[in-house]
Image 1 (cartoon, one colour):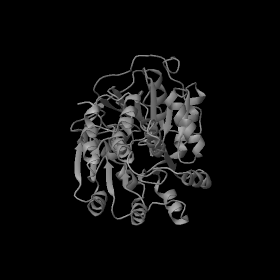
Image 2: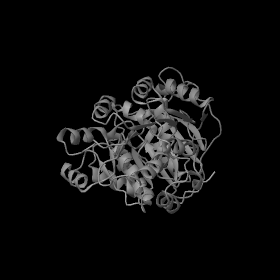
Image 3: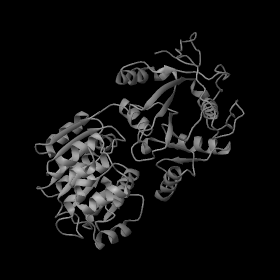
Image 4: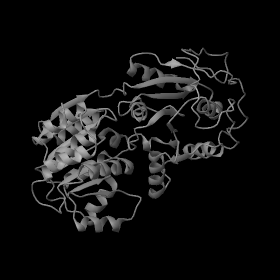
Length: 423
Protein backbone atom coordinates (compact mmCIF):
# COMPACT_ATOMS: atom_id res chain seq x y z
CA UNK A 1 0.00 0.00 0.00
CA UNK A 2 1.16 3.55 -0.74
CA UNK A 3 0.12 6.92 0.68
CA UNK A 4 -1.72 7.91 -2.48
CA UNK A 5 -4.35 5.27 -1.67
CA UNK A 6 -5.61 7.45 1.19
CA UNK A 7 -6.82 10.16 -1.21
CA UNK A 8 -5.45 12.92 0.97
CA UNK A 9 -6.00 16.53 -0.08
CA UNK A 10 -3.45 17.30 -2.85
CA UNK A 11 -1.65 19.91 -0.74
CA UNK A 12 -1.38 17.47 2.16
CA UNK A 13 -0.20 14.77 -0.23
CA UNK A 14 2.49 17.20 -1.41
CA UNK A 15 3.77 17.39 2.16
CA UNK A 16 3.90 13.59 2.30
CA UNK A 17 6.00 13.54 -0.86
CA UNK A 18 8.28 16.30 0.43
CA UNK A 19 8.81 14.32 3.66
CA UNK A 20 9.90 11.32 1.61
CA UNK A 21 7.09 9.04 2.79
CA UNK A 22 6.20 6.24 0.40
CA UNK A 23 4.81 3.24 2.26
CA UNK A 24 2.72 3.76 5.42
CA UNK A 25 3.59 1.97 8.62
CA UNK A 26 1.01 -0.44 10.11
CA UNK A 27 -0.38 2.16 12.54
CA UNK A 28 -0.64 4.71 9.72
CA UNK A 29 -2.32 2.20 7.41
CA UNK A 30 -5.00 1.47 10.00
CA UNK A 31 -5.42 4.84 11.71
CA UNK A 32 -5.51 7.26 8.77
CA UNK A 33 -8.71 5.90 7.16
CA UNK A 34 -10.48 5.67 10.54
CA UNK A 35 -9.56 9.23 11.49
CA UNK A 36 -10.54 10.52 8.05
CA UNK A 37 -13.99 8.96 8.58
CA UNK A 38 -14.37 10.98 11.78
CA UNK A 39 -14.18 7.98 14.12
CA UNK A 40 -12.79 8.18 17.63
CA UNK A 41 -9.62 6.10 17.74
CA UNK A 42 -7.64 4.36 20.44
CA UNK A 43 -4.26 3.44 18.98
CA UNK A 44 -1.91 1.13 20.84
CA UNK A 45 1.51 1.10 19.23
CA UNK A 46 5.09 1.04 20.41
CA UNK A 47 7.45 3.97 20.20
CA UNK A 48 8.87 4.68 16.75
CA UNK A 49 6.01 3.28 14.66
CA UNK A 50 4.94 6.53 13.00
CA UNK A 51 2.08 7.57 15.26
CA UNK A 52 2.54 11.29 14.63
CA UNK A 53 1.81 11.05 10.92
CA UNK A 54 -1.00 8.60 11.69
CA UNK A 55 -3.01 11.38 13.30
CA UNK A 56 -1.41 14.47 11.74
CA UNK A 57 -2.17 13.63 8.11
CA UNK A 58 -5.92 13.04 8.50
CA UNK A 59 -6.18 16.12 10.72
CA UNK A 60 -4.49 18.24 8.05
CA UNK A 61 -6.81 16.72 5.44
CA UNK A 62 -9.80 17.72 7.56
CA UNK A 63 -8.55 21.24 8.23
CA UNK A 64 -8.23 21.99 4.51
CA UNK A 65 -12.00 22.48 4.63
CA UNK A 66 -13.45 25.08 7.00
CA UNK A 67 -12.26 28.21 8.75
CA UNK A 68 -8.74 29.38 9.42
CA UNK A 69 -6.92 31.31 12.15
CA UNK A 70 -8.77 29.72 15.05
CA UNK A 71 -7.89 26.57 16.99
CA UNK A 72 -9.53 23.54 15.41
CA UNK A 73 -7.18 20.77 16.56
CA UNK A 74 -5.46 20.26 19.92
CA UNK A 75 -2.66 17.75 20.51
CA UNK A 76 -1.66 17.15 24.12
CA UNK A 77 1.78 15.64 24.80
CA UNK A 78 3.57 14.86 28.09
CA UNK A 79 6.92 16.60 27.46
CA UNK A 80 8.22 19.73 25.80
CA UNK A 81 10.52 17.64 23.62
CA UNK A 82 7.66 15.54 22.29
CA UNK A 83 5.52 18.64 21.76
CA UNK A 84 8.30 20.21 19.68
CA UNK A 85 8.83 16.97 17.77
CA UNK A 86 5.11 16.80 16.86
CA UNK A 87 5.06 20.51 15.96
CA UNK A 88 8.06 20.12 13.65
CA UNK A 89 6.57 17.04 11.98
CA UNK A 90 3.31 18.87 11.36
CA UNK A 91 5.22 21.85 9.99
CA UNK A 92 6.84 19.63 7.38
CA UNK A 93 3.66 17.82 6.40
CA UNK A 94 1.66 21.07 6.27
CA UNK A 95 4.29 22.92 4.25
CA UNK A 96 2.02 23.50 1.23
CA UNK A 97 -1.28 23.93 3.10
CA UNK A 98 -0.97 27.27 4.89
CA UNK A 99 -2.13 25.57 8.10
CA UNK A 100 -0.27 26.84 11.15
CA UNK A 101 0.73 25.02 14.31
CA UNK A 102 1.94 26.56 17.59
CA UNK A 103 3.41 24.99 20.71
CA UNK A 104 2.33 25.71 24.26
CA UNK A 105 4.46 24.44 27.16
CA UNK A 106 6.20 25.64 30.31
CA UNK A 107 9.80 26.64 30.84
CA UNK A 108 9.55 29.48 28.32
CA UNK A 109 7.83 32.87 28.27
CA UNK A 110 4.04 32.99 28.53
CA UNK A 111 3.44 36.20 26.58
CA UNK A 112 5.17 35.11 23.35
CA UNK A 113 2.80 32.15 23.28
CA UNK A 114 -0.14 34.51 23.77
CA UNK A 115 1.05 36.57 20.79
CA UNK A 116 1.27 33.48 18.57
CA UNK A 117 -2.20 32.37 19.59
CA UNK A 118 -3.61 35.82 18.85
CA UNK A 119 -2.08 35.80 15.37
CA UNK A 120 -4.10 32.68 14.67
CA UNK A 121 -3.28 28.99 14.37
CA UNK A 122 -5.37 25.98 13.48
CA UNK A 123 -3.35 23.44 15.51
CA UNK A 124 -2.04 23.76 19.05
CA UNK A 125 0.46 21.24 20.42
CA UNK A 126 0.54 21.60 24.19
CA UNK A 127 1.76 20.18 27.47
CA UNK A 128 -0.97 19.91 30.13
CA UNK A 129 0.28 22.38 32.75
CA UNK A 130 0.88 25.38 30.50
CA UNK A 131 -2.29 24.64 28.52
CA UNK A 132 -4.31 24.89 31.74
CA UNK A 133 -2.58 28.22 32.45
CA UNK A 134 -3.77 29.56 29.09
CA UNK A 135 -7.28 28.21 29.66
CA UNK A 136 -7.46 29.85 33.09
CA UNK A 137 -6.06 33.15 31.75
CA UNK A 138 -8.52 32.96 28.82
CA UNK A 139 -5.66 33.42 26.36
CA UNK A 140 -6.71 30.44 24.24
CA UNK A 141 -10.09 29.90 22.59
CA UNK A 142 -11.04 26.24 22.29
CA UNK A 143 -14.72 26.80 21.66
CA UNK A 144 -14.46 25.81 17.99
CA UNK A 145 -12.23 22.79 18.54
CA UNK A 146 -13.00 19.82 16.29
CA UNK A 147 -10.30 17.26 17.14
CA UNK A 148 -8.32 16.49 20.29
CA UNK A 149 -5.37 14.07 20.40
CA UNK A 150 -3.91 12.65 23.60
CA UNK A 151 -0.48 11.36 22.60
CA UNK A 152 1.63 9.07 24.81
CA UNK A 153 -1.29 8.85 27.24
CA UNK A 154 0.43 6.27 29.43
CA UNK A 155 3.44 8.54 29.88
CA UNK A 156 1.15 11.38 30.91
CA UNK A 157 -0.26 9.03 33.52
CA UNK A 158 3.25 8.11 34.70
CA UNK A 159 4.05 11.82 35.09
CA UNK A 160 0.91 12.49 37.13
CA UNK A 161 -0.91 14.48 34.43
CA UNK A 162 -4.14 12.48 34.44
CA UNK A 163 -6.03 14.95 36.69
CA UNK A 164 -4.86 17.82 34.44
CA UNK A 165 -6.07 15.94 31.37
CA UNK A 166 -9.52 15.51 32.89
CA UNK A 167 -9.63 19.24 33.74
CA UNK A 168 -8.64 20.14 30.19
CA UNK A 169 -11.32 17.90 28.69
CA UNK A 170 -14.00 19.73 30.68
CA UNK A 171 -13.15 22.92 28.77
CA UNK A 172 -13.51 21.35 25.33
CA UNK A 173 -16.68 21.22 23.21
CA UNK A 174 -18.80 18.15 23.83
CA UNK A 175 -19.02 17.41 20.12
CA UNK A 176 -15.53 16.59 18.86
CA UNK A 177 -13.40 13.78 17.55
CA UNK A 178 -11.09 12.26 20.17
CA UNK A 179 -7.93 10.30 19.40
CA UNK A 180 -5.93 8.55 22.11
CA UNK A 181 -2.53 7.02 21.40
CA UNK A 182 -0.51 5.02 23.90
CA UNK A 183 2.17 2.35 23.91
CA UNK A 184 0.63 0.54 26.86
CA UNK A 185 -2.79 0.41 28.47
CA UNK A 186 -2.61 0.66 32.27
CA UNK A 187 -5.91 0.51 34.12
CA UNK A 188 -6.25 4.29 34.61
CA UNK A 189 -5.79 4.93 30.89
CA UNK A 190 -8.37 2.23 30.14
CA UNK A 191 -10.87 4.03 32.37
CA UNK A 192 -10.05 7.36 30.73
CA UNK A 193 -10.56 5.88 27.27
CA UNK A 194 -13.92 4.46 28.32
CA UNK A 195 -15.01 7.90 29.59
CA UNK A 196 -13.93 10.04 26.65
CA UNK A 197 -14.09 7.85 23.53
CA UNK A 198 -17.35 7.19 21.72
CA UNK A 199 -17.52 3.81 19.97
CA UNK A 200 -13.81 4.00 19.19
CA UNK A 201 -11.89 2.14 16.53
CA UNK A 202 -9.32 0.19 18.57
CA UNK A 203 -6.01 -0.37 16.80
CA UNK A 204 -3.31 -2.58 18.28
CA UNK A 205 0.08 -2.56 16.57
CA UNK A 206 2.66 -4.50 18.56
CA UNK A 207 1.53 -2.83 21.77
CA UNK A 208 3.71 -3.29 24.88
CA UNK A 209 6.46 -4.87 22.83
CA UNK A 210 9.92 -3.50 22.02
CA UNK A 211 11.15 -2.88 18.51
CA UNK A 212 12.05 -6.16 16.83
CA UNK A 213 15.19 -4.68 15.23
CA UNK A 214 16.87 -4.22 18.63
CA UNK A 215 19.24 -6.74 20.23
CA UNK A 216 19.46 -6.77 24.01
CA UNK A 217 22.31 -7.52 26.40
CA UNK A 218 22.99 -7.22 30.12
CA UNK A 219 26.32 -6.22 31.65
CA UNK A 220 26.33 -7.33 35.30
CA UNK A 221 28.58 -5.08 37.39
CA UNK A 222 28.85 -3.65 40.89
CA UNK A 223 27.36 -0.19 41.32
CA UNK A 224 30.70 1.50 42.02
CA UNK A 225 32.18 0.05 38.80
CA UNK A 226 29.44 1.22 36.44
CA UNK A 227 31.25 4.29 35.19
CA UNK A 228 34.60 2.61 34.39
CA UNK A 229 32.76 -0.29 32.74
CA UNK A 230 30.68 2.13 30.65
CA UNK A 231 33.80 3.98 29.52
CA UNK A 232 35.50 0.69 28.65
CA UNK A 233 32.40 -0.44 26.75
CA UNK A 234 32.22 2.79 24.76
CA UNK A 235 35.91 2.57 23.92
CA UNK A 236 35.55 -0.94 22.51
CA UNK A 237 32.26 -0.64 20.64
CA UNK A 238 31.66 0.72 17.16
CA UNK A 239 28.91 3.30 17.58
CA UNK A 240 27.18 5.99 15.55
CA UNK A 241 25.35 7.88 18.27
CA UNK A 242 24.60 6.71 21.79
CA UNK A 243 21.74 7.54 24.14
CA UNK A 244 22.54 6.78 27.80
CA UNK A 245 19.80 6.74 30.42
CA UNK A 246 20.32 7.48 34.10
CA UNK A 247 17.83 7.42 36.94
CA UNK A 248 18.47 10.92 38.33
CA UNK A 249 19.07 14.42 37.00
CA UNK A 250 22.24 14.78 39.07
CA UNK A 251 23.69 11.57 37.68
CA UNK A 252 22.89 12.56 34.08
CA UNK A 253 24.68 15.88 34.57
CA UNK A 254 27.78 14.45 36.23
CA UNK A 255 28.11 11.44 33.93
CA UNK A 256 27.84 13.74 30.92
CA UNK A 257 30.61 15.91 32.36
CA UNK A 258 32.84 12.88 32.93
CA UNK A 259 32.43 11.60 29.39
CA UNK A 260 33.10 15.07 27.98
CA UNK A 261 36.30 15.37 30.03
CA UNK A 262 37.79 12.26 28.44
CA UNK A 263 37.06 13.42 24.93
CA UNK A 264 33.55 12.32 23.98
CA UNK A 265 31.28 14.90 22.37
CA UNK A 266 28.60 14.68 25.01
CA UNK A 267 25.53 16.60 26.14
CA UNK A 268 23.14 15.92 28.98
CA UNK A 269 19.38 16.30 28.98
CA UNK A 270 17.54 16.58 32.28
CA UNK A 271 14.80 18.58 33.92
CA UNK A 272 16.98 21.21 35.58
CA UNK A 273 18.07 22.64 32.22
CA UNK A 274 16.40 25.69 30.74
CA UNK A 275 14.29 25.06 27.67
CA UNK A 276 16.87 26.68 25.39
CA UNK A 277 19.63 24.40 26.72
CA UNK A 278 17.38 21.36 26.36
CA UNK A 279 16.69 22.30 22.75
CA UNK A 280 20.39 22.89 22.10
CA UNK A 281 21.23 19.45 23.48
CA UNK A 282 18.54 17.78 21.39
CA UNK A 283 19.47 19.62 18.21
CA UNK A 284 23.16 18.92 18.72
CA UNK A 285 22.44 15.23 19.16
CA UNK A 286 20.27 15.18 16.04
CA UNK A 287 22.81 16.92 13.80
CA UNK A 288 25.84 15.00 15.10
CA UNK A 289 27.46 17.78 17.12
CA UNK A 290 27.16 15.43 20.10
CA UNK A 291 27.91 11.73 19.74
CA UNK A 292 26.48 10.89 23.16
CA UNK A 293 23.39 12.18 24.95
CA UNK A 294 23.05 11.34 28.64
CA UNK A 295 19.46 11.72 29.74
CA UNK A 296 16.83 10.94 32.29
CA UNK A 297 13.55 9.41 31.14
CA UNK A 298 12.44 12.85 29.98
CA UNK A 299 14.02 11.91 26.64
CA UNK A 300 12.53 8.43 26.36
CA UNK A 301 9.54 9.58 24.31
CA UNK A 302 10.50 13.00 23.10
CA UNK A 303 13.48 12.35 20.89
CA UNK A 304 13.29 11.31 17.26
CA UNK A 305 16.78 10.55 15.97
CA UNK A 306 16.83 7.74 13.45
CA UNK A 307 20.59 7.12 13.54
CA UNK A 308 20.88 6.14 17.22
CA UNK A 309 22.91 2.93 17.15
CA UNK A 310 23.00 2.19 20.87
CA UNK A 311 20.82 2.78 23.90
CA UNK A 312 22.63 2.14 27.18
CA UNK A 313 20.77 1.92 30.47
CA UNK A 314 23.35 3.11 32.96
CA UNK A 315 20.57 2.55 35.49
CA UNK A 316 17.91 -0.05 34.85
CA UNK A 317 14.45 1.59 34.60
CA UNK A 318 11.80 1.11 37.26
CA UNK A 319 9.21 -0.54 35.00
CA UNK A 320 9.12 -2.76 31.95
CA UNK A 321 7.15 -0.08 30.10
CA UNK A 322 9.98 2.39 30.72
CA UNK A 323 12.45 -0.16 29.37
CA UNK A 324 10.40 -0.55 26.20
CA UNK A 325 10.23 3.19 25.66
CA UNK A 326 13.93 3.70 26.31
CA UNK A 327 15.13 1.04 23.91
CA UNK A 328 12.55 2.19 21.37
CA UNK A 329 14.90 5.09 20.65
CA UNK A 330 17.10 2.72 18.61
CA UNK A 331 16.21 0.22 15.90
CA UNK A 332 14.20 2.88 14.05
CA UNK A 333 13.60 3.59 10.37
CA UNK A 334 14.29 -0.01 9.33
CA UNK A 335 17.71 0.04 11.03
CA UNK A 336 19.02 -2.33 13.66
CA UNK A 337 20.15 -1.20 17.09
CA UNK A 338 21.63 -2.41 20.35
CA UNK A 339 20.29 -1.99 23.87
CA UNK A 340 22.77 -2.52 26.71
CA UNK A 341 21.81 -2.46 30.39
CA UNK A 342 24.24 -2.27 33.30
CA UNK A 343 22.76 -4.32 36.12
CA UNK A 344 23.62 -4.91 39.76
CA UNK A 345 22.55 -7.62 42.17
CA UNK A 346 19.68 -5.36 43.30
CA UNK A 347 18.19 -5.35 39.79
CA UNK A 348 17.41 -9.07 39.55
CA UNK A 349 13.63 -8.64 39.98
CA UNK A 350 13.36 -6.03 37.23
CA UNK A 351 15.54 -8.13 34.95
CA UNK A 352 13.17 -11.04 35.49
CA UNK A 353 10.20 -8.81 34.61
CA UNK A 354 11.88 -7.54 31.44
CA UNK A 355 12.74 -11.07 30.36
CA UNK A 356 9.13 -12.05 30.90
CA UNK A 357 8.01 -9.25 28.56
CA UNK A 358 10.61 -10.30 25.99
CA UNK A 359 9.60 -13.96 26.35
CA UNK A 360 13.11 -15.18 26.94
CA UNK A 361 16.37 -14.67 28.82
CA UNK A 362 18.68 -11.80 27.95
CA UNK A 363 22.30 -12.45 27.10
CA UNK A 364 24.81 -11.70 29.87
CA UNK A 365 28.12 -10.24 28.73
CA UNK A 366 31.47 -9.35 30.26
CA UNK A 367 34.34 -7.26 28.96
CA UNK A 368 37.63 -9.08 28.56
CA UNK A 369 40.37 -7.56 30.68
CA UNK A 370 38.05 -5.51 32.87
CA UNK A 371 38.70 -5.94 36.60
CA UNK A 372 35.36 -6.71 38.20
CA UNK A 373 36.96 -7.25 41.63
CA UNK A 374 37.99 -3.68 42.45
CA UNK A 375 36.75 -2.95 45.96
CA UNK A 376 34.10 -0.34 46.57
CA UNK A 377 35.30 2.97 48.08
CA UNK A 378 34.53 3.59 51.73
CA UNK A 379 32.00 6.26 50.78
CA UNK A 380 29.81 6.57 47.72
CA UNK A 381 32.05 8.80 45.62
CA UNK A 382 30.80 7.56 42.26
CA UNK A 383 30.67 11.04 40.76
CA UNK A 384 33.29 12.79 42.89
CA UNK A 385 36.44 11.12 41.58
CA UNK A 386 37.93 11.41 38.06
CA UNK A 387 36.65 8.80 35.62
CA UNK A 388 38.79 5.83 34.72
CA UNK A 389 39.97 5.81 31.13
CA UNK A 390 39.17 2.91 28.86
CA UNK A 391 41.80 0.19 29.15
CA UNK A 392 41.62 -0.28 25.40
CA UNK A 393 43.61 2.84 24.61
CA UNK A 394 41.26 3.56 21.72
CA UNK A 395 40.04 7.03 20.90
CA UNK A 396 36.40 8.00 21.52
CA UNK A 397 34.12 7.44 18.59
CA UNK A 398 36.42 5.04 16.77
CA UNK A 399 34.95 2.25 14.69
CA UNK A 400 36.19 -0.43 17.08
CA UNK A 401 34.97 -3.98 17.33
CA UNK A 402 32.21 -4.71 19.81
CA UNK A 403 33.63 -6.45 22.87
CA UNK A 404 31.44 -9.46 23.46
CA UNK A 405 32.11 -12.69 25.29
CA UNK A 406 28.95 -14.50 24.22
CA UNK A 407 26.22 -15.71 26.53
CA UNK A 408 27.29 -15.39 30.14
CA UNK A 409 25.45 -16.16 33.35
CA UNK A 410 26.69 -14.56 36.53
CA UNK A 411 26.52 -16.63 39.70
CA UNK A 412 26.48 -15.04 43.15
CA UNK A 413 29.81 -14.74 44.91
CA UNK A 414 30.14 -15.61 48.55
CA UNK A 415 28.07 -13.44 50.89
CA UNK A 416 29.19 -9.85 50.73
CA UNK A 417 30.63 -10.09 47.23
CA UNK A 418 30.31 -6.67 45.60
CA UNK A 419 29.36 -7.84 42.14
CA UNK A 420 27.09 -10.74 42.99
CA UNK A 421 24.33 -11.12 40.44
CA UNK A 422 21.78 -13.82 39.85
CA UNK A 423 18.65 -14.10 37.77
